[in-house]
Length: 337
Image (cartoon, rainbow, N blue to C red; front, side, top):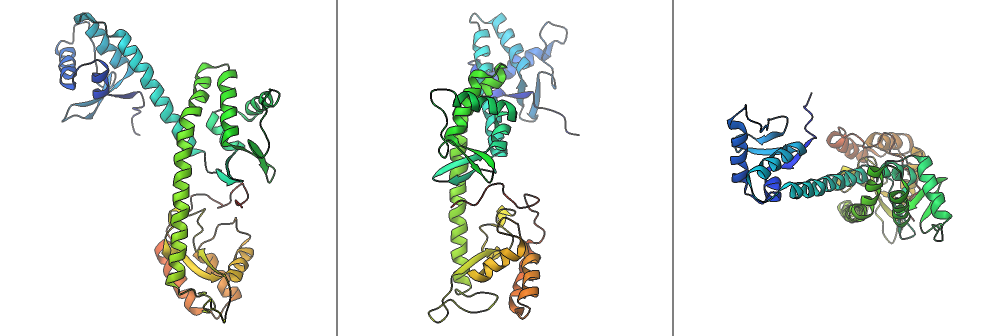
């Protein structure tokens, strides 16, 4: 079992900078601590610090290790470093908290969806990000609604298929309310940080998703060019004589297998009517699918389509080992218009 090192977060170069000394000078101080095990100064490995790289003497300190260094410097230097190290530790804690806030957002944003030119987040994800309960979030919502500036439906919140969603503007309003009304200081500070850290984090997530959609669209167009605008089941080409819309279908669905979503080899071109027929047969567009699903569909509905089976088995041999990121491949909100 890996040893817990979560208390060691202050790199030696960060500590040296805060104390206005060089890393080499910090190393001399550490050597002094270690020179006499019987003196009053104590700095122990695995307690006050750990090594990142022992050969290069790169260390990472716990807070009490940083305080021990500062206390020693206070005793030998005319300038007091105590206030400096207190301020440094406070800023460092804030930086760590912000990092945890960012991680919480990234781990709980799967419901983020664009509706009416606004990004909405499910109530479940909001509860997880705020680290609160449904009941407490409801009280925050009610408090805002009874104020002079209530949240507006369709703008700040909405209900999709009976599930409550908040737009990012509504999410930030809820965070502000919680940052002012929660009784525990740490929880208030967490929600306060969400307003600053969250805005940048969501901006990056949304930007990455937009880039991903462009890559998927690019892959779909490439697949259509590769297949010469031809339905791979009927082998009929979309043309003036045979007019039909051509769909680029993800053999392994893009929601359950996002790592394959922009891969041209995971796309097959189908007559749009057949594409709709497949998804109806498979249980709807929100149900994930694999090569096996398409193979079974073809064997049942288009048993003479031999060439496409060969292609599907080839794709299965390449991607069949991939595991879905979600068990069902379902999403809790309707597709964006």
